[in-house]
Image (cartoon, one colour):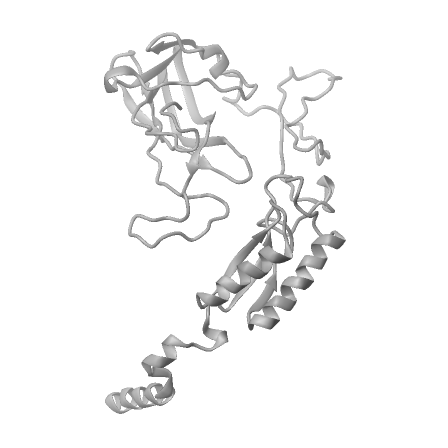
Length: 322
């Protein structure tokens, strides 16, 4: 029975494809519904009726089936029409008439940019995230004071909750280590401050690594590392991505596989080192986030160090620094 069922399936599949659809000529002049459509970006330069007509006629000439009008505004160009202004809507109506004249489809994106937004979306209505700050105080007595404010964007902040709890064992503030670097001269005080300022690190000469050592003076247990890095070009986890040229090593428009920055290492004697974790290099993110938190199995040692090497070129800044 199995061969008969298989043969019947072949007959059904074969019978569902019309002979005319397989003719070579059908691929040369496909119907409008089978033609590709493309994004058509507006918003960062002046939009004229002459330019609209020339764009659409060129797309019709090369065989496209239609456009998706995409108002993408990354900067406030003075000669660009404001979203939903009378001038902007007049050009949209003109574009629709031209598409109808040329036999092209026209679709509209729901807002300016990669998300449904626009100048009518104020910060309190926009996409939001949870932010936090913390303050350790001495227990057993009443506290009165102003809590540190978490980081904000566009001046918007709304308190969600204040959580107070006894500090679990091992969560006391870390002791201040003695910090050294090789090559010498790095501004380590700024690098390890909590004010989000960064320090520029050039590659060491002759291909040597840059070593940043922390000596806690006694065994110290670490479970995580938080750091911020000047972003490189788009990374594999960029939030929104466009297709690019087809290739085995292509990951999208402007996307590269960035090598790691190096490793976090530990040592009991300052001479023999063991790897704790790899430090991934962060690519550019459209939301601007730069901070990373790396969690790893608890490691107890007197010495920790950042072994930074072979991080490659920063294609966004066009230099070799990190």
